Length: 124
Image (cartoon, rainbow, N blue to C red):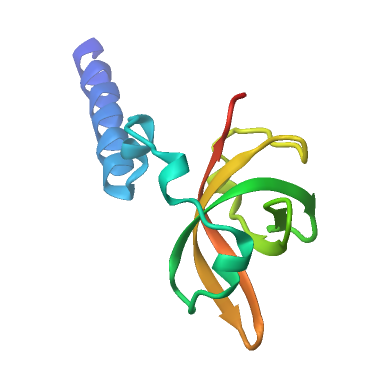
């Protein structure tokens, strides 16, 4: 009976790890090189990009506008962000914090926003 329970528990652990890897969640546990300064764009630059362009921005998330909608500024201009709850990864960000965002330009008519794919809090 103990062997059966051990095998059942081991199978559950392995299947959970396999499922996480399949969903891409396992890669989030690993770090890597991130060169924030080399590729950041101003909000004005982002607003000039076509739909579906991937962009990096540095600045502050200044306020929450809706359930997953936020206002972002680079100190000069503002743009709306769409941030799914899973993107936060436990980070707590205030308007005083500087962040690097990676996302995709999303255009709805004449309005542009950024669908955020990752948020990196800059520790100063």
